[in-house]
Structures are given as structure tokens and as C-alpha cells.
Image (cartoon, rainbow, N blue to C red; front, side, top):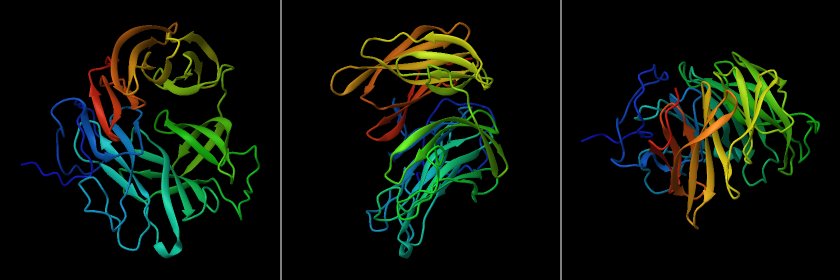
Length: 355
């Protein structure tokens, strides 16, 4: 009988490349014998493939000390500590988590630490936003927000990269045109990071201040503004991180160099009520998921393969899934990460494997 005393379990197609550093322990293999294959046993808050799709970074919650007995996968909260959340790095070939980081703080301080936006490099360095906030105050009043990095191959002690948000009695000292909050963190390679810079106000409103490219050097990061095409959009790495593909929900795509030089314009065909929800590239090809409502409980997803040369596309598949539940497409494995009953699961064989 298998031991299920694990942090997290998953099943994906096997990959023989070198895994992330970390101690393999707990169960190996599937939770279920049929699709969708469940990757976690309970609710996840956020999920992202690593840049090379050899791992999956997830954010999950923790239960308070007086909750019912914890099932496998939940982290016990020591007595007298606040309830925050955790980050975990799952190996893409299956089994228990390779790395986990949880933040706790002394209950008498009345503060709680929350882990936010995060991404992982091919070498296993995790960059994340950490929020330290007073309990009972409306976010972000009284919060201290910083950008951190931790090398999962060399322990679990993070280093602070940058101080972000601060306020004093509900007033922020950061000028409105400056960045004090990052979202959409994405590694281009082992050092370069994409991020959407925003200005967060004490009333909770955040205003975009543009896309930035960060150079990570040890425990320091240097940011510069990333040129954005006139059509706007969200950038993703393309052509082995030599280019960026900017895409929009309306199907507009623009291929640029990292320096902002526009190379191609194009459009991903979609229906009148359809929106592009996810795009991911591998080499000179990309996969796009196009969502169309299909009744009150389901969405229909059309998969289109996009060629970077000329930005032409063709339809390569379709599937149904619960409304608003598809999370991320995996180009190297022919899989899509989804949420099913708030648990993370894997749909195999619904998209083609890109070379």
C-alpha cells in the first residue's frame, strides 16, 4: 500500500530532464486512474508552470490550529501562530512537492504574512511578493510589501530583493508615478524577469505603470522599462526568450524583440463571443486557448497553434470544461492545468506537444 503522507501529489507525462533540486519523498504516481488527473487534494489559490515546464509553482492556504484534522497536503499551523499561506514547487513528472515555503508570525503581534505573486526560474530560484499586514485592517493599510528571492537548491531562507509598499496612517510615501507593487512575474531565463509594475494606493486601488524587465543578480534586482507596442497586451517569452509575444483577449498579437522592435502583427481567429484566455510559446510556435460559453456550467475551448513566422495559426483541438476553470496550457507535455472543484488537476492529451 502506498504511503500518502505527502505534501502534494500529481501525475503528468514523464520527462527525463534533470529535476529541480530537492528531496523527493512521499508518494509517487497518480491520485486517479482517469482524467482529469488530480495534482492536489484540496484548494489552490494560484498556479503557474515553471518557464521550462519541469515544475509547477502553486500557492495554497493553511488551516488554523483548531480546524478539523488536516488531510495530507495541508501544513499544520503551530499553536500561537497566525494563519497565512504557502508556496510549493511540484515536480512535473509526479509525486510529492520538492520545495515548500510557508510564512507565519507571532499571534500577539496581530499581523499575518501572505505570499502573493511568484515565479520560478529554470534553476529553481523562486521570486515572490510577500505581504505583511495587520490583522483587522483593510488591505493594504499598515501593510509592508517586499519582493523576495529564495534558492530552492540551497535551503529555504529567502533574501529581500526590494522594498515595495509602505504607508503611514493610510498615507503612502511613494509618488504616484512610481512602482510599489508587481504582478505577473515571469522568468525569461535564469536571470531576466518580466513583471507588470503598478502603483498601489492605501485605498486598495492599483494603477498600471508599465511592464518592466528585471535583471536578477544574487540578492539584488535592477529594473528597466520594457517598450510596449501601441496595441498593448500581455507579454510572454517566445523564440527561446529572444522575443516577446504580446497578446490580448480580442485575439490581437504582436511579436517584438526584447528591445521593443516590432517584428510581426497578427490576429488569432475567434468567435464573436469568444476570448483568448491563455497563450504559451515554445520555440517558434505557441498554443492559444479560446474560450466560448457553452451553457450555464461549461465552456468550450478551441486550441489554436500559432506560428511565430508570419503569425499564422491553425485549429488543433477543442474540449469542454467547467466554466472559468482552465488555468494554464503546457506546450511541452500536451496538457492543460485546470481547477476542478477548486483542486488543481491535469487534462492530458487535449493540446499538441510543441517541438
